[in-house]
Image 1 (cartoon, rainbow, N blue to C red):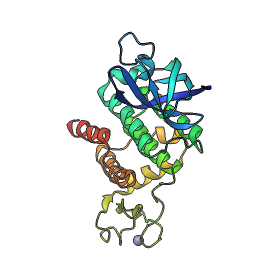
Image 2 (image 1 turned 120 degrees about the vertical axis):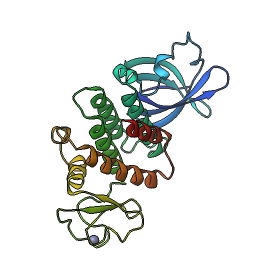
Image 3 (image 1 turned 90 degrees about the vertical axis):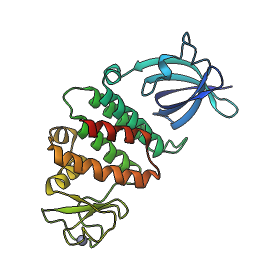
Image 4 (image 1 turned 90 degrees about the horizontal axis):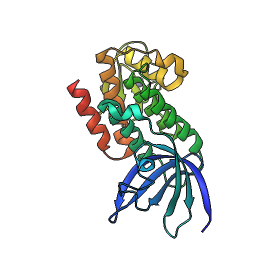
Length: 253
Ligand SMILES: [Zn+2]
């Protein structure tokens, strides 16, 4: 049974039998993979900490018949501050679910890029300086782009014309922004103000320092959240449980 090691983020866990867990890991080396953590549900288990959602660890795995087996783990980062704040905890959980939904098992193609993107987003989410909405939307847009699902944000998806500054639309099914003339011609179009379009473009294209400085108003933040929520629902092909919960938190703010 050959062993191999990976740097892994836990993105999902499922109960297996009385005391085991199946962990879905996103690894820097192999992309997404599922492993069995034997005895991990026992309070005395050495895998207790390493099997928590969005814990980062170095893991030694053994090749198993169907699923590989976790043999040893060394925790690198537990992102502790995310766990004591309901809003940030919900967002970190959402990042994990989104990454899980948009990736396939054992696809090492851009594993390192996605791994770095996600751990950087969790670190930013943890830092008190970053606006959690901005970090969330930047992560969504960059993950979508890395997986070939980037929405069109620079021209009208219907007629191809450049967007003139002013009210625009966004159609999840057509895959991006609509000009003022076409914004009512797609059934699922939501409206976007000029400021929302500029922020979406900056989030998708600009360097970290530039987008971290963005401070959308409440109204603009809601427009962006709604557009991306519908777009991701369309691309992920189903509802994300953690996104529903984030919506509830947003509504209660
Ligand atoms: Zn158009």
